Length: 132
Figure (cartoon, rainbow, N blue to C red):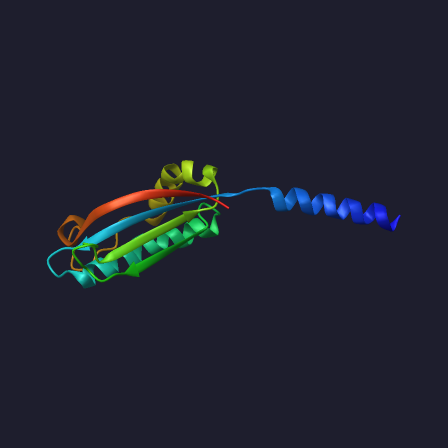
């Protein structure tokens, strides 16, 4: 009987350990325009970050980061925005789900009533699928 339980436990472990999950990461690099760092940080902390916190709570994304970076010729951006999805399903439904969250959140929160195009520019964005 002990052997049967041990074999059953090992079989379950094998099935769960061999299951691969696909993690998909999106990265957007943002340049701050016209020395509007305060506006950019306010915008991302009060809009982008808030949406991602809600997305985590609803299991729409796995995690996210906002990183300030050193602007250089090789990396011509100031902010790196990363969103991590723990499945292809989460990634494929991102637009619908974020639109839902945007509607729930209401209007954009802006510092000094400047429009996003006045203080930030997306330099590049890409998606990285990773098999674990």
